[in-house]
Image 1 (cartoon, rainbow, N blue to C red):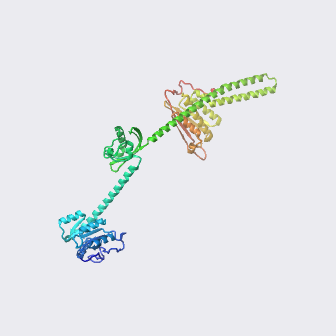
Image 2: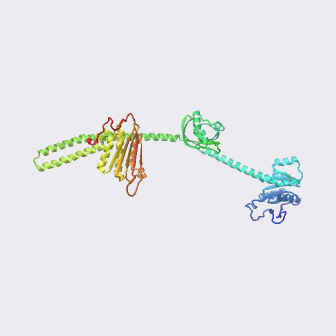
Image 3: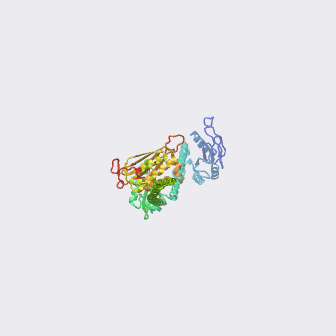
Length: 542
């Protein structure tokens, strides 16, 4: 026994002399190029537990000759071993099996107590097979006989590799366990029903929300073939998520399920797991039953509002028609009677001035009659009685005559018999479109296409004006456009308005209004040119 404490080992030259092949430093010293823990990152810090200086020197020399860059310290008691382990980090421990007051097995136990994670090698001059087996079972990485020290370097390197592998595996296992815990936490915390399924359709993960949705607990689902309370629901859901099991994610597919005596509306999303083909997929079932109910209620409300709007329009049109008839019949008859009386009085008058006054009064009454007729036509154009085609053509001519804006009407129908309600709605939409052209478009030309077949009627109005901005469609005061939309929706059709605003000088791209309305073939007889429904000119109706 050469030392009752630690033995620092000084720098040693290589066997051939000159530049040292390795650095041997005393504990606590540092040299250039050392890492954060006080030593070169390629340098091995080895703690020797040995009471023979000759054996320690020999073992160190064997390691150096093997090309290992080591720094070493030698201790021979438990106290000095614990002190050395507390002072720094060691890459390996090489211990003699038998010391006067210490032993290799005891040293191994101390190393475990302080949390040493490197390789622990036992070197002995004479160790029996049973003792070697006992040491290996206790946790020693290897044992080497002192009469065969050439095995020491490879045994040390193998132990270092095994420790590195063990550490990597432990880190991977720790990361995997952490990820698993996080995934379990996500599955437990999310309100969305989640489950994972393998390619064999076996449930591998399951969330409490899935139990709340289906009533199936973990014992009924985990590690079992996937099954919902209803077999048809099971097959339908497996069909929806089948693309995910082949590597293609699915998002937001509608699905309904009967669970707990209630129908639930769901959206299904599924993402494939890793692998080619995927090892399985994770499925999310989002319960949107309340949204479906809200949407249904909203649809009912919208339907009721549209029906109310249609009813209001019907009442308004009926009142307009009634008022137009009363104005035309009653006021028209009264104006006619007044004109007749004025004409008679003028003829009987013997005074020239009186006759002139009566003539002027007759002309004013005639103007009043024309105004009454014009107001009556505006409230309920009688041309509507001759069909929507005639009404559109009459309105186009009337608009062009009063505004100077050219209007060209193209149609594939001579006569189109519609019910009164859609005829009035289409006519009012056309009137509003022309009004918007006159008020906002600064256009000089309007093209109108009216086409119909057995199932659909479409009306397109295009101008060459300055266009329409997207803000105009969102304005709260755009009641004209909203009124047109409501009329079209009330007839089960659709409407589209397009046209980018332009600046500068003409020509402009203008604005295009298009509506499409479904027709009932049995209730919408149509004829082309030459059909049995004659075409009437609306001028005669005034």
